[in-house]
Length: 599
Image (cartoon, rainbow, N blue to C red; front, side):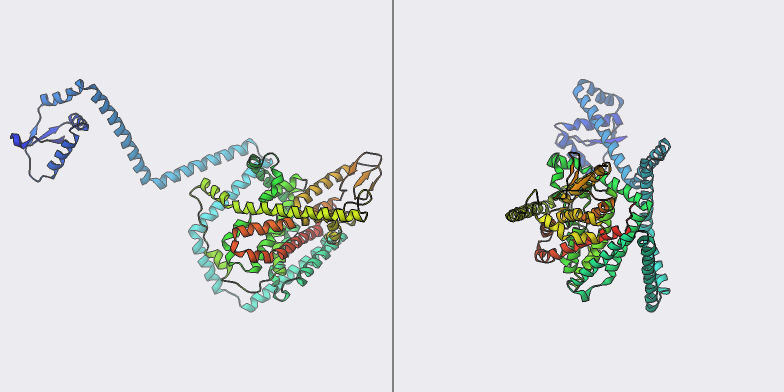
């Protein structure tokens, strides 16, 4: 039973009454308050509730209660309104109840959802393995699942027990820490063992089987010594990063070029990377049209923003290292374009990976750390926390795209300027050559690229390219160095296709004055010539990088956009970084050529 207070006007002599009503009568009376008298009734209730005097209770008899209920029959619209309001109240109560229940059991509900999703995925995995197993797709699905599961377990163990394990290891190390003399002795033994192992492998595993591989080994020594003698301060060179960089290159070369499983692994990885990056074609084609591949310069500055927070604390040597790495390696978004021109994808992947330690080694050799500026960069990296740029994935993607606008603008402006200067230079050289008879058909057109093909001939020979192919590969290296690597890979792809055509030809042939291969008794001329498979692979490694004059302007513009306060320092180290990046690519080609065989 509920209590409803009816209060009449005291001036009329009436008194307050307390009436006990059942639930139906209570609903009717409360709902009829929604009209003219709702405020008056509410105020009456508040006054009565605030009163401390006891009020007599009067019960309503059955007839009066029946009259109150029957009033709804004469007001059907009130009945309908009452029905709607009651249903709405029920829905609100249900929603509030569910909300409170979810908040009370939030953790359990989340865990249940995760368990259901996990069970659903493993059910899918089991059915997929039963339905078809043994092909590349099934192996890929299984391997990725194992990697994700192991990574998840490692993350959870590290998060929960990482501190305990680290503390235990530190205590054990402090108790059994060897003396400095013992550590030095162990390091010397390991270093001697590594050097002896490398020498024995090179002598018996490489040079005896392939004597021509001595040439790229000698080229590696020549390149390293050249960079040492041209170093900004040879006395300050720290040989530890140099040796480690070259050793990592050596290990990668053995894995990729001397083991079948390593070759197959990088071949598989190369195909998967190209397959993934090909999905960007959809967005790029929508933006630039079907010929979006011609706008490849827009993707050259994509790695500069990764180290943006640390530019202010970098020394000149560290800034030189960043730029050298940018020149010596290729971004993932450009590898697919290299492969489309005909370069082998597996060697592109390994070339980009191998050039990273080479860039570190050569940069520290060419511009050693002379003095530290500001506090150590390592402390900055440890104390730095990535600032969240967006509230969700869409917001973060939009913020990243907007932040890239200055970088892209600098890139476009630099491309226009450098290509204009190069075209002016080639036009001038062609005019000067024509004045002295250097013109077709007796001689090729005198261009900057042609001059470079002669200048780079000794360098290409030291990389391990066979002598008959040196002119062709040197031309590609010249195009890559003074224009861009895309045109060089386009030339390489054309030469690779020429080589495939030439293999099926059994007649006579000769080279013309422009080094084009003419197939006699046919109307076929293989423009650009042909090269061997060995030279193709070495050229792939030598060309894989952004080290060219055009990229110099792009790199300066991109870094200036993200670090305008270091513009003077960026310009100061840029030329040496370009040379170091080019040399890192050449050293990568030397190491690849040293491990190649004719099979």
